[in-house]
Image (tube, rainbow, N blue to C red; front, side, top):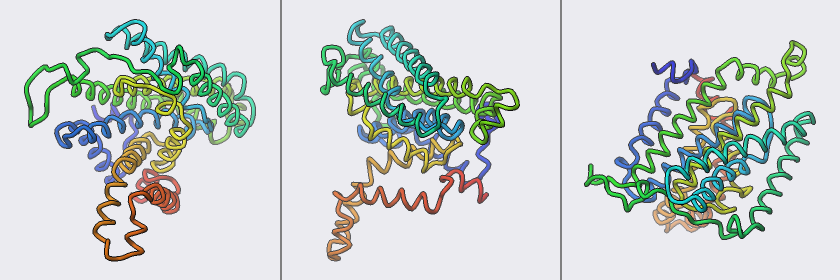
Length: 351
């Protein structure tokens, strides 16, 4: 049963298996193991970014396509839910309509971009996607009557997914309310999408994508329509990214250019892919988990370390919490240096 769910793609490393099981158990039991608003927010963000990073790895790691428009598709899914909730009303029907509309819009836009630009060389395609993503971000900021502009949109989701909804008392000191239901909606949807991505990359379609990545001329010579496969991969990746954006919108109950469309998020996705390991779905799990945890807790850990070394002037200054981005960059450089194929690639190579 487990092999079927993993689509035959086993971790192939005892240590990697333990890490993945620990992450799965931690996310599945996060509300009970790590009580608190911040920890639950971190766990939900990890779930969403695992799906987002996995969808981008389908392009970069499995197909060899460099794109800078992934946050655009992520934002389309988020704004789809926001606009549907704003205009249709508070209900699960609005969430469904917004989710489907966002995924379809993302897939269609990806198809248009792919058909017109995937015939050019990789660097030119990357520049085209960057230009389109920048144009969409500017358009969203200027259409304030529809999108809320720079202020974004606040909207109401079904009451059953909010803390105001109580469906029980307490279980292990955890309130049984709509916030808990919302988290498990995010968790199980993210798990299902990740397993779907794992199935896609281990299917015959996924093998063709890897062949195109290794040598597109040879793949074309043996009869595969390279452009069609690349466009299909781009559409699937965009649709899954939009679904991740929809989950993010349901969880956050707010969307704005800075939270869904910023280029900083695109850079974070790239870092997660590189840290975890390109060309492996498990890399998305490890990379997203480590990066989101570092984003949320590295500054606090540095504050503790700075306080503990207060008597040592130079060390205390270096560990100042305001320098957490510096140390995050150092950690990234070290991870690339010691794990050039990513953490997952290194663990599999050294098994």
